[in-house]
Length: 215
Image (tube, rainbow, N blue to C red; front, side, top):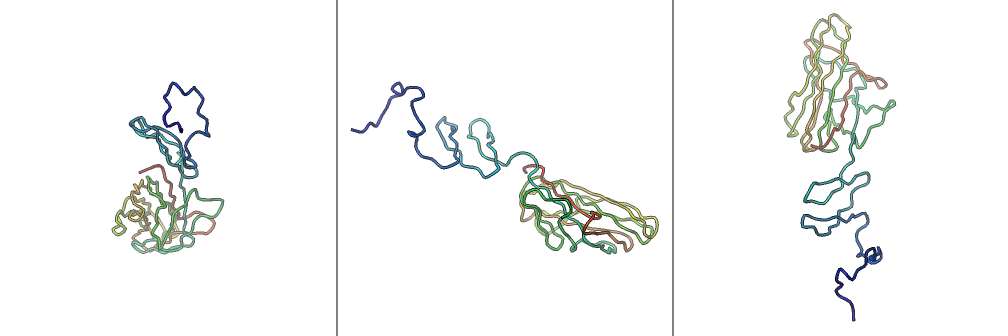
């Protein structure tokens, strides 16, 4: 007759071996739920760490701390800007003594798409040469509906004379709650025609993208 019930006192300490335990899923971890009952914690992904979910819930696997995404793009050629213009072409990922962390940004016609949700640091840095005394700017525009782009950061400088080089920078924290709708693009602006510098070897006009943490 098969044994269907064993009372606790009949089981000696350290008597239950791994071979006597029920089979489970590779990578699962045994924990306890809010009722104190055993529960299997689902297997995480490669590189994730086990994270506490607080009292009343089993732990979960989540991305490890630290920087998980960092990317840098630059303009590869000079761009002439008259009044206000977006940088829609001549973008490349920095390939000089650099390698992105994570998946990296994607870009189409100057619109940058984030690879994952989270709080992102975005900076835009530009070098320009003026044709006359006038203002020059570097602007970051952000959309949250994949349609309307609003200025979220801008930096200004003034040229004094022709071929007077100036540098500008602007930066913003972006809450990327939806990668399909939250995107960024970059804009130059001046009262006169001005040349924003580009290069395939040096960062003259470029942008940084760093994921700081979860949204």
